[in-house]
Amino acid sequence: MAVDGLGMLLALVRQHPGVTRSELLEQLGWSRVTLERRLNELTESGFVVAISQRGSTGGRPPEGFQLNADHGVLLAADIGSSRARFAVTDFLGTPLLSVSRAFDIELGPTKALDIVRHQFRSLLTQAGFEPAAVLGIGIGIPGPVDFAAGRIIHPPTMPGWHGVEPAAAFETDYPGAPVAVDNNANVLALGEYRTTWRDRSDLLLIKLGQGLSSGLVLDGRIYRGPGGMAGEFGHLYCPEGTQCRCGRFGCLESVAGGWAIQQQLQSVGNNVQSSDDVVGLAMRGNYLALELLTRAGEFIGEALAPAVCLMNPSTLVLAGDLARAGEVIAVPMRAAIKARTPEYLFERLTIVPARSGSDAGVIGAAFLAQDAACARHELTGRTDRRADRDPS
Image 1 (cartoon, helix red, strand yellow):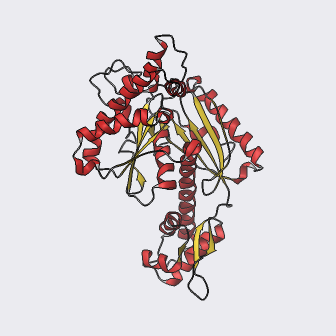
Image 2 (cartoon, helix red, strand yellow):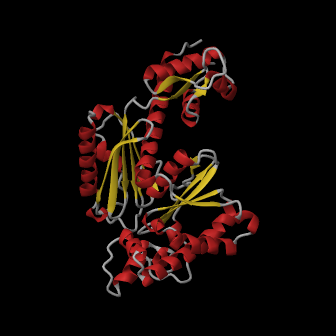
Image 3 (cartoon, helix red, strand yellow):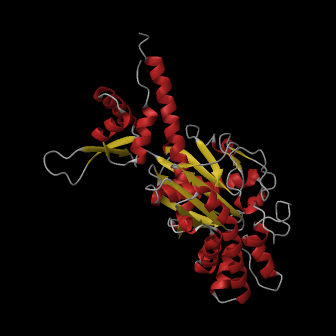
């Protein structure tokens, strides 16, 4: 029976850029003939390129393989409640051109997705690419997503979006490009993990913005849960919580989310319209803003402590606008976690700010798009090989 492992080979090349033939043979256990046939398929398709390895001790340097950055481009969008970032990237997920703009998610799906389509077309034109060059599209959404179905499910702050499948909005413009949609905390976690933490098996990312959410990487993969809804960190119970935007009482978001802090600052006359404004006010020395961010850090740390005990994560990454407050929110959070977890767990936990910068979300969305493009290619290749296979 023929070996059908194109997806396995492509995954190894993606995970280990520069991997050599001998390393691939060791990992896959294939014959040299089978490996060469599959490598030829990937290189002829344009997905993979061969590169010369530097540092050889003598003779001809070994040949390695990696994804082809110039195979095509990816479109990425990181959509928040009040702001969105868009990018066109190469096939490795490196932004070639990106833009940030105000964005009102409450416009509803039709108008909001039209804005996304316009931004994508504009960026493609500016970057000098035709729509046919687009191999995949990745989109991060500020609400729960059934990832397998590509469907938004009961988003508490996105009126009119329940049941929407955003991929349909892009089928006409990019008929050959798969569209992947996920919660933006998962998108951030994916980007942080693949750009910075591949040497670790797990990562827990907490997104601190208008809302609170989390993305979890286990064994190198985003963990979404059986229904795709894992990561609803902001709706954990907090004894000091009040009424949340979701309609329930006692959610962590209601005392530690950016929208809740913003409301408290507005109630005493401060002109703050976003989480970014809240942090700016604190950095200018506003006592109430500093106090509210410190309390938020304490509440967040208290909520995270059980997760640290249950999961024993190696890496905890803080992302989002409120995370820009730095030690103001991180110090009380660390103290709360430390006070509620065994020392042998806490001392092995790395707590750091996100390192991907302002493009973190679109880089993660580009990786989503890359995953979808590679999966589409692997499926197409497998179907073609079935059709061509010798019946004997």
